[in-house]
Image 1 (cartoon, one colour):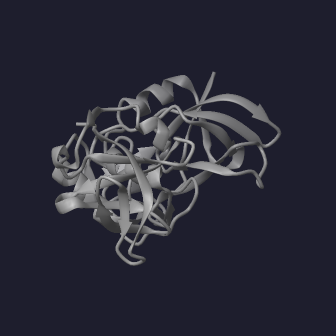
Image 2: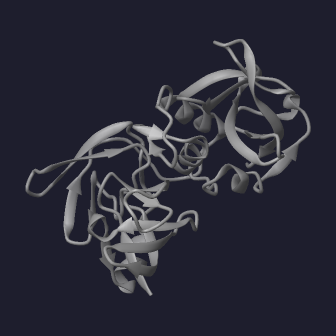
Length: 256
């Protein structure tokens, strides 16, 4: 089995090995994965963080051997906490990375991927934090436009948003909303929830298709066209602009 790491800010993970295929998620800078198949110029990967599968272009990632892979995953606990920032290599070449990028072997404002050493003078996070930190991080993404499969401040979907907010604060969520709904403990009433808990919403067929982060005073932050804040009640999400309910509440979960 082969392994790999992403050294670009974000790489599309597609459903099929075709550039016109649906983007189902994104591979972010510093994330590692297993390579389980290949076809022409494509690798099929399983992302280490959430076990998500899909296809990426071979020329957008770095293939690594098992020894290097093990070294990286044992030294990759620092994550960028900057919305957007530049990193520089030893030749002073600039590269953009965004919120949630992983910084392997981070120490004294430097990190490395294979033989490439980078300078990074921004803020990082490296441990499990409080629910208040979940709320603070969620607000950084406000007004990020919706992008199916997206995970960055340049474009994100509802479950990508919740996953990244939790990841930055040291808590692991699965990739899709219906998968995330299998995690944590059920809350029966909004009054039992705390800021930082998750609320899930279903469609007419009873399928969970949406997720958001509960805020104080019956508000919720979620992705509907963009990352926005709306009201939350026992029926669901009440859009403060259109003055109508947009999503039907299915369940609330306390993940930690």
